[in-house]
Length: 231
Image 1 (cartoon, rainbow, N blue to C red):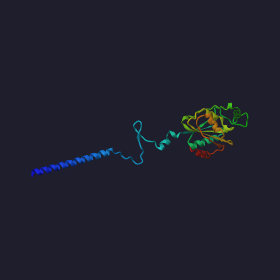
Image 2: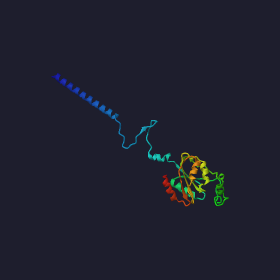
Image 3: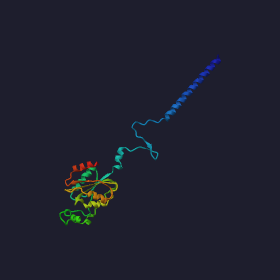
Image 4: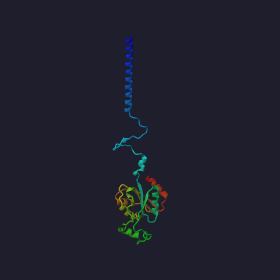
């Protein structure tokens, strides 16, 4: 009788040990499976990948690109004989947030110099003799020139072309990588070939067609044009 009881107890002990072993094995397998499975990324999160230096990196946001160096800077460079071109230049600068640079002859033009009806006046003599048109400038290269991506160039029309101090400015600067937009003011003459002639003289830059404003140019006229450019 004692022998039978002893055998039964031994059998119960063996069964208990086997059950414990299976439970431990199941727990271990579950733990291994859990650690091997990738965690789910939050919905809508950006995908990241290691950079060349081993650090994680992600694509820049749209706002970061817009606020970065790619946004560029705008300059309005102009020569104004009687103030009309200056009015247009200031309106362009206000509409685009541009900086201003005044193209200033080393020897400024007086009212008498600008009297084109007088054959002996300075502009009349310069018109008659092209060798006199190479006007020296008080300053040729605007500060921070290399940082500007877009350059507006303004001038009055003299005998169908840009006032010659502007030609001196164009010849003195490198427009590589810049978008250049000419604009002029006149009582009756159009833009004509003035912009294309300046582009030829520059030899560099992406020159757009530009526009002509009347002598009575207004801020509204300028704003409408800027809107067409999409700046």
